[in-house]
Length: 230
Image 1 (cartoon, helix red, strand yellow):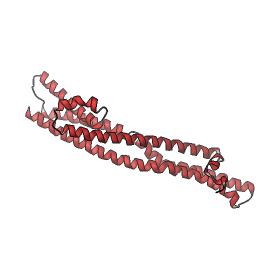
Image 2 (image 1 turned 120 degrees about the horizontal axis):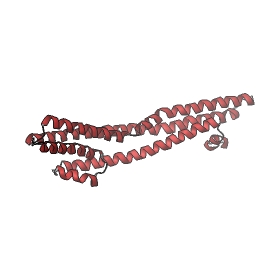
Image 3 (image 1 turned 180 degrees about the vertical axis):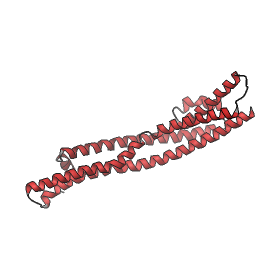
C-alpha cells in the first residue's frame, strides 16, 4: 500500500475542519464506550441482586428482617429499594393509625399511599437505570452525519486541489478522496457500537422494568392481605 494512502498520514494531512470532525467523533466514541462498559456492569449487578433479593423475599423471611438486611446486602439496588419504599410507607400508615386510635390501616387510603410510594420508587429507579442511554442513541443517529459532513468538506478540498493542479490523474485524486472518506469511516465506527449497545440496553431495561412492576403488584397484594387480616 502507498504510504501516502495509509490512515495515519491521511489524518495528519487532513484539513483543520476534517481533523476537528475526526477529533469530535473520537471523543464521542470514547465516551460511548465508557457508558457501555458502565451500563454493562450496572445492569449485570442489578440482575444479580434482583435474583438474590427475590429468593430471600419469597423464601419466607420476615418482612422486617428483609428490610433490615437491605442497607448491608443490597445498597442502591432497584428492586430492594422499591420494596423498601413500599414497606416503609406501610409501616408509616400502621404507626399513624395506631397513634390515632383506629387500630388498623383503612384499606383504601393505606393501599393508595403504598401504591404511590411504589410508583414513585419505580420511577426513580427507572430514571437512574436509563441515564445516559439517550446519549448512546444520539451518537448512533448523528455520528454518520457528522462523518458525512467531514467527507463532503474533504471532497470539496480534493476538488479544489484538482483545480489547482489542473490534473485528474488517480495519483492526484486518490489522496484527497481517501482523506475525505476517512471521516465517514470514523462516523460509522462511532455509530455502530452505540446503536447496538442502545438496543441491547433498552431491551434489558424493559425486562428489568417488567420484573419490578410485577414485584410491585405482588407486594401490594401481600400488603392488601395483611390489611384485611388486621
